[in-house]
Length: 358
Image (cartoon, rainbow, N blue to C red; front, side, top):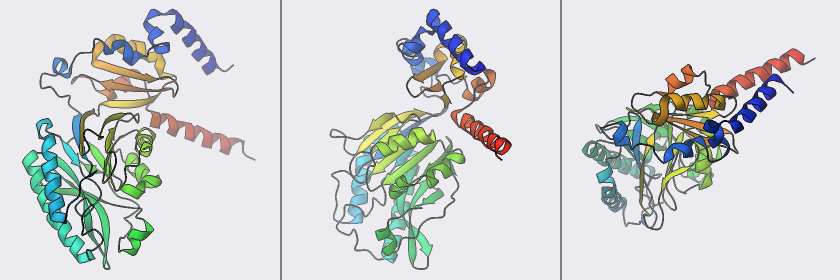
């Protein structure tokens, strides 16, 4: 038995005998404090945590129109349903302006680009009016008579602050004039953090998702023609970021960094879903850092939530207070993020191969 294995065994034996740790083996640390967790208002009189982002997503399920102009009007009318929640960001489906209309497939490249510019101007006004970011998927010029399927990010002042161009269009889209986007594209900086976008068929490749996560993206938006189902949940936990889908048909949803669904559309709310997401959290590999959890909770109490996933041996530490920052907890208790553990493990493996290979 190695020293690490012995340490782990002793810890688990001790935890079984310690009342303060029994929740780890039974109902979980998070569940043990949920019953008396204070509301956001109790911790923050403004009712919102410093890194809390309200996200809204849209689905075109059962929504059709004669023309792109009619479709845009219907979408904007539907979005009135989120006004009471004052979202920080709204995500729209892939090229929604032409989808589910009688003009789909009938526009020339020039017509698509011209109509896209009109749509971007309309949602610039929308963003200014509602003081929110909009992830607006349209077509943009690529040169050589071709175009990108893009998602343009519009800020709260109605300015275009960045765009993502679909890296993996389908064969049919390429034949119709779509250019594959660059293999590297930078994250887009917002006032709540770094974001990225993936579009539809991109769900089948890892490169774009990894590209953004390596740059520190905390939210990746997914405008799409199809809902992608459990692939969205899997992308969230695999890349340790919030993933927000917005689709032409089926379910649009918001998944937390664990892959759990926070909100989704469905039979009774086919077009809209919304939810707050707290970005002041971190994803940890459980061992050996679980040994520090009792001390963290003893010090911070209700201000910190620790959610343990027993079978996966993951944990998520989340700040519930405006005066507690995750980076400080990591430093204080010498915790490493899941990504840091993987990077250090790969370095050790590489070194061992070099050292012992003949």
